[in-house]
Length: 325
Image 1: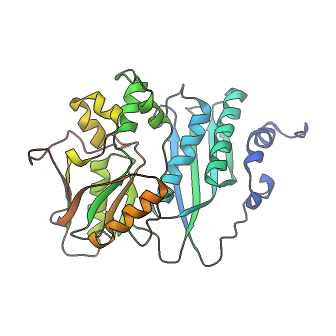
Image 2: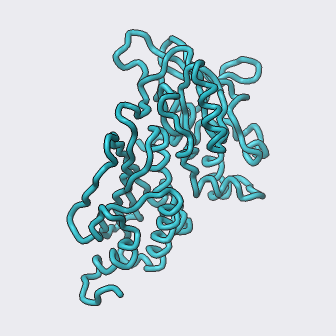
Image 3: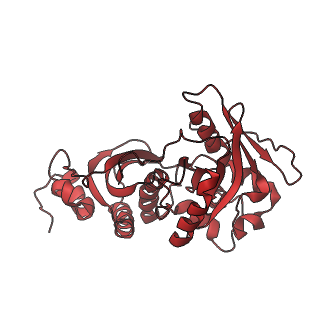
């Protein structure tokens, strides 16, 4: 039983978060965690924040908020070819937040800790006058020198994505009442991303990231990153007809295509893969049970993204993706 003499904050931690702690967390009783990485492995660290009203809706189920917080960070580890190891977390909630919300949030984390073999290392809890604000730092590991970076794309590399694109952005439209969703598929994909940890991309992809801010915008990030340290730039060209859409996204109709390509919240892998390694990617993805699709290629040119329609004509967008500023 929790110690009745504990101050309220520490009682909350003991009640909801101590059961999530792994060995390195020191039972959440110290000011820091003690992390011993696997021998002969490089550490990979990533952090993402989620704010109510921005990254999730205030009435989203608390357990799914917890799972999404963990999964968006696991998606970043997947894009680096890393294996999860542990995570740190900061939870800022308004005073008076129901204990049931925190219990549900912790239950969601516990469910995904079991699924993805990761445990809590430590963190911080605070009150805030604003909306619920959450931050999570995930730690993973890779073989030395094998982390997949953004900077490695080359002219001639194929552009590949996992899964389907656009479901998350359409799911937000569903949650906001702007789109129907008879099967519930779109709303589920918005609330519960699928981090693609099962595809061993290290040694296959020359560059990669996950699609969080929109396919077109994130592909532009790869183009700009590839130019670092080079005289020539890199341009991406994709065919809209090749971008994999779910049945639910296709049912939404062509008016939603721009949302699918620029809306974000996909958390699928976006990879640059040399032609000689494309078969290896397909084999690895098939073994993991995760579909992959080639949607275009990189070529020399001014950094940017060209999207062509079925007739080969360029498609323009009001904005390439999501921006916080």
